[in-house]
Image (cartoon, rainbow, N blue to C red; front, side, top):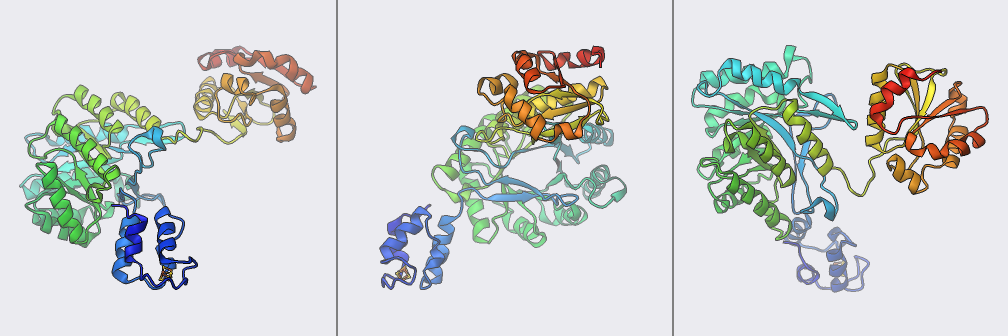
Length: 467
Ligand code: SF4
């Protein structure tokens, strides 16, 4: 619970010595409560009081790192949220998606495991500058140690073909095994991935905590009820472990309704009620909530993307599942306060050199990626010119005065375009055909051509354009 000024004052030495720069201990406490001064400014605080205030000043939801990171890229971060809804401010760490692999051969034989992995690992594309891929593989182990080892090796080989350094390590491995003794060799074999150890419950939290802590791994913890989960997390925290993921719903009796209710209640408790025991990211296994029903799983994946599933596990992830889901995630986890912009400049596409014609569009990221993709598809070399248009779409930028004949002419003359590009043909978006006359007047020597209204018409337009 966040401390108020009076609470902090009660913990100060109350000597009014002014060593902190404030006239009284009360004035100092008020400033600390407002966040204007750090508590460390008072050199006379007792260590216990300092610890209590520092803990109260922590953000309500912890940021947990999962995975080993790859090629210099840091591990994935989850949690750290400060608001319930994106429109309140912004959500900071996007959820991850994963596929479930069952070590139980009766549920998944080797062929099924290979097919699931091949489909999931093959799903890899870029959208608006962001790589879209399946970040997690969640393995549910059995009591058969030999089968567990074989399945883990199969997954590791698929994730890390040829055991090249760092290859595949951008993915997060989650190991679900409620028996710490059985999990220990599996954790050891997968240590290079820094896996998440899942399966801690009220009955086994001590042994699971000992294993996860000794290896520096995040620990997935679940409970039959929210109360049981809360109690287990309290015990883990008291034992010094704050590197946790909360399993949504009862692992032994999975129900979509309960898992969703848990997701909302846990997030509300952490952010609204300042209950830090529930201030952790979450894990939801949709393969357990709707087994064999890929349509329901896709719908639930969208629900848990919107409402607080930090890692969302499905039975399979191909392009059909991924395209809507990853698009939704990208929309939810972008900062609504910042326009999605690309850097203004000259973007040569299709091997364009100084003789290639110029096309103009705006710096709104979605427009840029759609237009540049269509130009690339046409096979025509083009220098794509991107002026600073405020991060708006073409018509919005024009209506807001951010894309005008004078701003484009200034960009071409003063932005170095004329020094880099010799071709003097400029194709402008059809939606701002109105700029043609003014641009011809402002850019002597340039031929201004009105291009198509829609990006989908670009390929045909460029192929038939006489240059
Ligand atoms: S330094 Fe500490 S004891 Fe002295 S006035 Fe400031 S808060 Fe009070």
